[in-house]
Image (cartoon, rainbow, N blue to C red):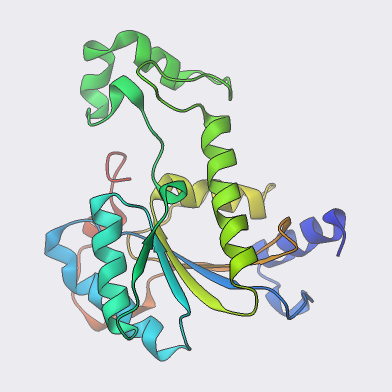
Amino acid sequence: MSASSSRVAAEMVCNGDAQSVSIGVNYPEIIVIRHGETDWNVEGRFQVGERLSKEGKISAIYSSELKRAFETANLIATACGGLEVIKDPGLRERNLGDLQGLQPHAAASVCPEAYKALLSQKTDQELPGGGESIAQVYQRCITCLRNISVKHKGQRVVAVTHGGVLQTLHVQACPNNQPVKFLNTSVNIFHLSDGDNWVFKSGVDISHLNQIDYLRTGFGGDRSSG
């Protein structure tokens, strides 16, 4: 499949016509999960694990090494037969340098120069204190999923990550679509073939949460939740 036909396929899926897309059999199905938000919604993280365990064999589980993602990945791993979670720094949220850990309302006054850099529209603008540029985050996330796809052709794998990473992956698969809000514990499925052929099969699926009572704000997260 050529790069141009891949883009057409991705756009067709993103526009809701998944049935018309033809892709090869030698690709992985990568189920990308946004981490659970708080200890309060641990049941939601358990439910996503139960759901995935019933939908077909999971061959591997990857995760950002950051706490909320890794805890979510471990709950999924337990439900899916006790797989070992593979930590992958490529799945972590953007490094904000001097702004790391600051609430948005405080960042402007505490680190004005770093905050100004964060608001820059330049994709190559790095953040003071070792923070990443938008371009660096994009390259890291895309490379991470490409590497996973090469290792797991013909398999179903899980990758637990953060909202910003999911936004980046969605842009790669659906470059002409509007941004999507990826809710906590949402199931998002990507197909990758030959490294550069991306299909966003389905996303923002939280149907597993129908089994429990939950607050949408709790699972939706906010700007600081990652």
